[in-house]
Image (tube, rainbow, N blue to C red; front, side, top):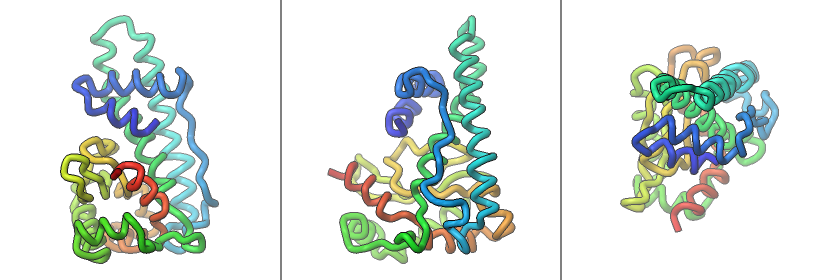
Length: 224
């Protein structure tokens, strides 16, 4: 679903294409909040139980609700003008749903190999494109911390160049210029209760619970 919806977002009529694609993929069913693949406290001490609970149950649920409402209104709109007026809401809430659905899978408890990048295709590609794993993390953290306001930091695969690159998106815009391999939420709701306004501390900590197995599966499925 995510890749189809993301491709739809790159078309000229962004939100309209996304709405049509999302409804098609879901069989015209409403979006639902995906369950976390671990307990709310499983990422501690790096991400607190309170943050994970609020982030998942409140913030992500809000995007799901907003997307469903916007899609319902879009499908029943009586004019193109009304449909155009709904495009921003579809893009924002649809992007929030896409990004967060990916984000939860991007994380894993440290006790379940979270934070461990073993020798393999992804590590080899990171070392080739960034020089070292540490150099990659430094570039990722620097560019992501520099986002003005809210947004996302990404490790993306550029299918045109065949390289991994660090890129950022604003607000809840999904990554459409690259194939997303790792995405990190830099909205304040993702870290403020624990790390206050110190973004670098949050970004340094999150590497301890990044699910590199999931990231490598995305990479190997794409970079063939």
